Image (cartoon, rainbow, N blue to C red; front, top):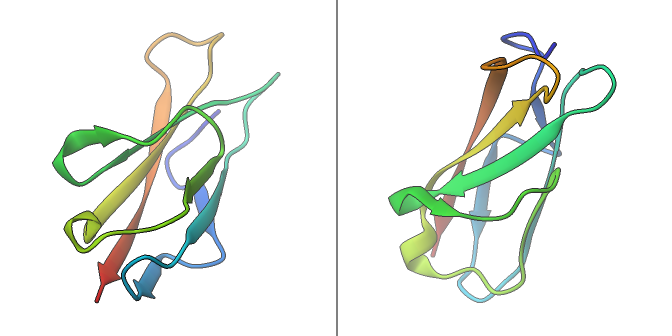
Length: 89
């Protein structure tokens, strides 16, 4: 892996947040021996290289789609993604 459809985000795929509140989302996938992760958000901004998206104080301009990309370092060009939608008020 990861195979298409094997990447999941939890606890949800849709979030609504008040500005300056926190957001924490886990991303998981099936890879052997392990997955590498990358989070990107609105404006193609990078949000780190772990399985956890963590934003302590989210802003209105971060409303949009965040993508977790899971990659298997042993299989070149093998990756899969999961999206989540965030609305900030």
